[in-house]
Length: 106
Image (tube, rainbow, N blue to C red; front, side, top):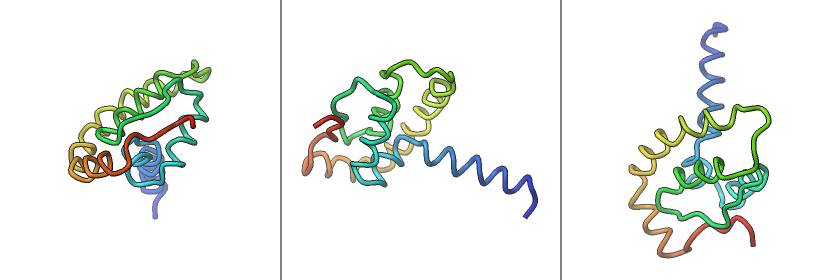
């Protein structure tokens, strides 16, 4: 593999791991809540329907990020998460009716 290929793979894996939909739909609830607690969000729960978008908004509704990196990434991820949340909508509707909202602070 070339350095360029490794760099692209690294950026893609980093972007996917930060994706709100990936954190809320494809991982356990505890992983999503851990990420939001780490960012000191003020959100208490997020719905499972369009949870990736809600995750990103909760990142924006958190204590200020001293690095200044979080806001542009969250804003860019809202678009990607919105598209992915639409694709997984039947599954998240089912999970919402069965399990309810994802509780961040218990």
